[in-house]
Length: 389
Image (cartoon, rainbow, N blue to C red):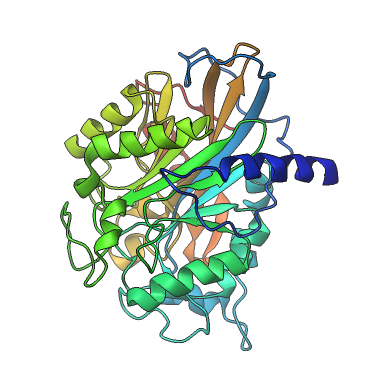
């Protein structure tokens, strides 16, 4: 593991040359995890990058989850009296996350450095211990562009970045100053990865596609896809590839809340990004339900991977499917010619609200209804995803 970590550190240094697109403030990501033998089975696809010479064959896996949305009731279940401990909530999925080369979360909350001004009603600001748990589970980075980015204001944006950095988790999304909001997070390794993050809005008070930035923070337009449009995202992705990234992942907070149908906006933007060849994987969130995936130009779009953790569900007036989620794992294989192909597996999950908001595995024999809902969504024509074994 030490030798592997050193190789990953050298790889990450290579990506530090990103200048046009920039580079996120690295938080000491160790990035050195061994891919499990239970990685996704291969599938023949079109190249996800132009063939290059003198590169050895290699593979990586990227795992991604849906919204980390800790409502006040979730935080109460994590409270210990002297702090907060979320580890029991994620214990069942920890082995899945740790198998991956890179693991990415969708953080739909601000993080408080001193555990003040915490979540109230629908304004999210979570204890800093949440970040420590995410790192312990195995997450290397988190997307922070979403409609709750501004819930704790500019201070919340600043503290979220600091708390993540203190826990060695890379953040990609809005920054508290004009430097860096549109910059990618980068991961070195046998196949170099760059990660971008955009949302339909950064303020929960605005519930429609918009290019409006939070007050006094015009630089955050870099993280609004309505402002950047597909052409701007593609241009940013091409800059990261010109600087050395081989795989570009884009997290998009989009779609309609509690709607299992993919919107025309999602379809139009997703098609444009993947057909360009500049973007290799799209991770979608915001609907809080699992939506179908698609494979376009040999590349996957996960329109919505549901909720990872929240208190949503039929008991509180939201759809029953809001307790569903998936741990998705995309495997990227590079052959000796430089051709990169990808394949996808997923593990359905379910939030057990009644027993401490624990994220548990949904299987044919355990939480079967949740499992069937997720498999039905992910098995629709246009995507060759397979349930993880």
